[in-house]
Length: 377
Image (cartoon, rainbow, N blue to C red):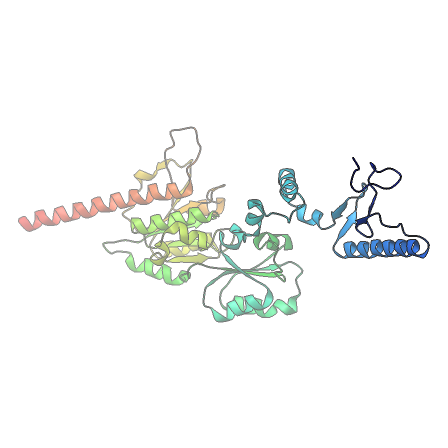
């Protein structure tokens, strides 16, 4: 039986497939045709290489074409993700993974809001200071920044009582990572501060009344969650205000407002430049200044909190500074029965403030009972 598609010499051998014409038994190109085909092949190969160069594809050592931009896509990925991406492609359009989608979601960096909202750049900071829609906590200027561009910002900030501090550029990059800050960053407060003089006078007005003043002075509390928890406790205990330092301490950021759970609406918070000088102002208005120290001989329950008092609490690491300790009228301690050497500052604030509440409530009850006995007579 004859096999279909064979030639005359060997009917069982199929003829070669002519790739140029796309059919069998085609006459092979000769002469000029062969040279033209070679030229067309070389031209097509050159044009193809040009197209691949434009698209970022080039042959590797094995002759395989590889996307030059793949290295950029692979940066920031673990080896497992790159392997998964390679198997997911398989010659088909690249498939996006969940890891890719997570990278595309805007980062919820705590520095963009966790420690407060930030405005950066010369013009945005200028507008924030001019508008005054939200209070500005502080303005941070990069060391070595162009003075003429920032002079108006510095003057506006100082005129509004906003602290201006200089810091290395690396610190500004940490505050607003990846941003073009132009050498200036403004930290926006979550609430307005009460002027220190106004709060001092309000405390002085309570001296000698049935509800004597009780204030809290913080010396270097840097954790915004601790500050928010203290403000919340101050409001719940019925105290009358909080003083915080301008520098090296947490301000009224968004994190503080969240931890305070609404207490910022009711508790006046004032800033002070010098805590030691503030103590003298409190004493001059009739308040006792009582600091906390782990080595104090007087227990917090032994102090008479029914008097006009200002409770001083130190920072998380070092406690009260030496100069502040020396300026206090008294130092009290909370007994520690375990192996840990100190309490969290917000916990210590709650313990002492509610001891003051207990003593003041008992005193009012005694006064009421005495008045009832006198009226019965």
